[in-house]
Length: 117
Ligand code: 5GP
Ligand code: ZN
Image (cartoon, rainbow, N blue to C red; front, side, top):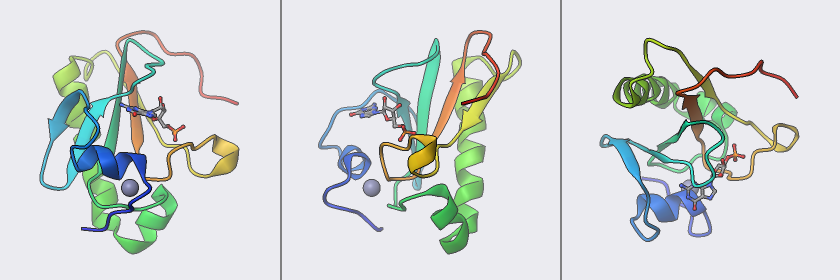
């Protein structure tokens, strides 16, 4: 599995930084965002390091599908599958990506505003 020694999320996958795990498989980890921007805010990441979703789509498209399948399972476990939720990924600088280890945000448990800048 690819890891990056200076990557925050690889450190979380390694268990060296505690996290509030919501769901886990052999290849995916889902844990609560440390600064929640919604009543439910969970990050879903591949355990193997990739910088961005775009990069991952080129390198390993199956893993992209696994992320979205896991996002749905997170929504189910958070009890928001029926009420609705948002899955979003910031890709690159203009989107405000802070952590360059692929992740999707799963947001919900409240009425969300429109997607926008
Ligand atoms: P980005 O802006 O890259 O799309 O999102 C990175 C997310 O990681 C942010 O929402 C931020 O709050 C979250 N985050 C940063 N550091 C930590 C951490 O140490 N633990 C957890 N659980 N989330 C973090
Ligand atoms: Zn990483």
